[in-house]
Image (cartoon, rainbow, N blue to C red; front, side, top):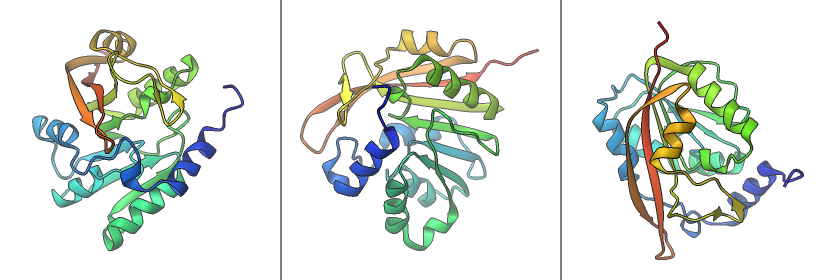
Amino acid sequence: MENFDRKKHWENIYQTKELKDVSWFQPTPETSLAFFKQFHVPTTAKIIDIGGGDSFLVDHLLDLGYQDLSVLDISAAAIDRAKQRLGYRAKNVKWIVADAATFKPTEQYNFWHDRAAFHFLTDEKEISNYLETAQQNIKPTGVLVIGTFSELGPKKCSGIEIKQYSETTMTERLKNFFEKIECLTVDHKTPFDTNQNFVFCSFRKIQVS
């Protein structure tokens, strides 16, 4: 896998598959939206969706009046599709084409959301880099939400091996930088009538005195 071109892989998927032909298709991202409600995230908050691609979370957040939205994806094709879907509203979003493993933010965020990007990072260096970047670029009172395949979920996605997590292993992995608020497991029903079990965990930054 050392020679694996992650960007090329995802560009190809988004150039060749329709939105409803991918397993992560989710018209209403209810679990993600529930976290925004739970934490009373103000509409002026700086929000980033890591691996957001052409997911519908950004549509719903715009509908709710959020004003400072960033969407990051490794695939320019995914972002282009989202822009086309949103039409004139696309100008109200900051679009970032970057690999989550090497992303260098230029601002700090109040809410860092990641549904199913983190679990594609299987190399220890990439995982560590991602978490350090999040720690450095989430505001002191900010929230981190990560959703990954659980230990009952798939071991691969789109032909790529992923890293499964449980509440315990995710909390342990993030403990140097973040303290857990809560975790929950949810089943995502794919367009192919299969279920994928996810674990979603919310965290706050550990405050250094």
